Length: 393
Image 1: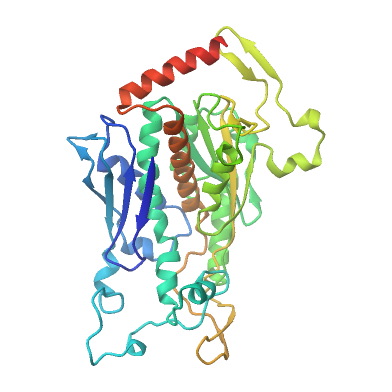
Image 2 (image 1 turned 135 degrees about the horizontal axis):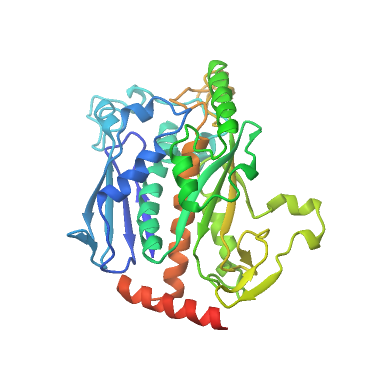
């Protein structure tokens, strides 16, 4: 499985092409739109979410609600495009229009964004050419692709969930949801304003977001993704680029504004001895091999262990501030405050949705690498045989 995304933040549309999906897999636009709506939610979102009502169009690879095995094309139209046709037009400029006369040009790069370095790399004097593609708007299609991946995983008995564990230094009490099933956890999170499983912490997070918005500033946080039902042995120890934790870490770090990732106990492992880190192995007739604990987050030696996969990512505060930071105009070289584009005081809840979908996508890709079949039913049979084998090993 492989995919590509295309499109600019204020361009006509966003597009994704997915190749390698098995045939006969149920797939509808509604399955994808449900996840796109979640991405646009969460307390702390800005005005752009009121403009765009993301709805996907499936334009190839699906017939009568099932995949064909051919490439699947997904499209999301940008409703705001109608206000940007002159600024972001595709056609060449008229002879009497000079590039410097186009409205909303950007020559003052925003600290923390791709603006300045991207302009240097691609030779853009109008930095809008950079920010239009580097915008987090691109994650719309990452979620759309991930929704397809989640449907693929569900067909194989693999479930995913994501939630916020920290915003602005306010942390959840893990004990408040540690023994909740993944289905119950998902229901709690989807009905919470900041996609948090701890109601007490959630209320404090909402207050913190409101406070920071009033001060023209932004907040970051930590999100957690859990995958249950994945068989052991996905990934490999034999080559560095086949390690599953490496792939999942790369996926998490590919999300805009993410600056750190950890599995299981993560960075906390640096503070405790090995006897409190590693997971002892046990066996039962019902379960086969399992771990008594899950401190390593379901991964050992670059491979899944069969335990729940637990991966966390930290998102920095969004760098577009309504009390903008200092920058330098690339034309005059004079000091100015940076350009202000639309911004969110906190996008951590939405980022948790993006994280779940990029992790689901990477897991789906890895499973398709391990088990090859042209149909979803054939793939189910292959994985069922493999589950039986590892249980009896």
